[in-house]
Image (cartoon, one colour):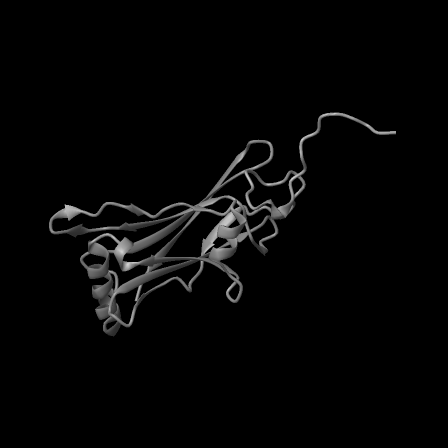
Length: 176
């Protein structure tokens, strides 16, 4: 005897793309934190590369992987050639796509990583990073570069099964 009816196809974790967090999933990220491994470094060619590490915590403050969307933003107080510095936001990372999620996850550090090459940076940032690097010798001027304080913000957004939006963010001041 067979039963017929209309039922929504069950999704599996291997489908590759999730729109929302499953309703029975207890380890939903509710906080995002920028990890202190976040650094600006130079390549062998002398170009700057910004490597942003971030991770998620659940309701029990345990580190978890997450589904959702993440955007990395950069803010700086100060001026460049007399003009105020505009905030920068890099392309959103869609962690609902499992291949993208895996590609940004570093198993050794248990963090997600976004690498921003110099070509994707605003024109003023390499100059500001040069000044921060020079300030390492004198800790008193570390935050007095022409660009002021360089702040990285990671913004996390996810949609729960009931349609509720979860938004969390964390700021990290880049210093020498």
